[in-house]
Image 1: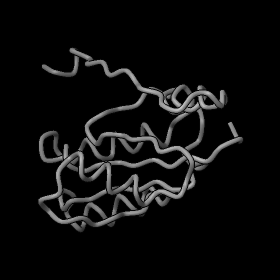
Image 2: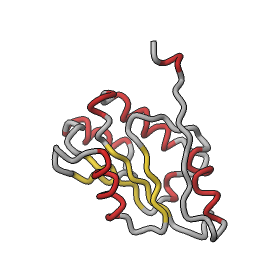
Image 3: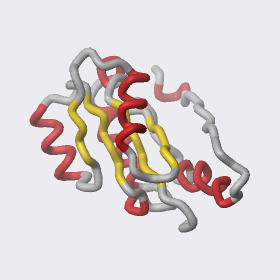
Length: 134
């Protein structure tokens, strides 16, 4: 998968709903991908103030491959993603949500279809693990 560059845009809007514990779980699942996140040209955390400064510093130290991008507090979910996409310098932009955990093959499976030059968009699949709801 070296024939193209990719970036990852992470939003923080959903952290208000799910809580800050989700942030570290999401980032750990990104870090543990079978196709290393270190292959990304950039990983942008679009932060609309949902992450308190002390937790943000701790998070950036633990996951040094993240670039924090501060956005106004009122910036919504879609606006965070689109602002991140505009900042990316890669050929492919991958979006991730703060309230999700990613299967270890998620990134590889999203990027693999782009080996075919006729592929321009790839979508993912989201499932809820009901065992974690109660």
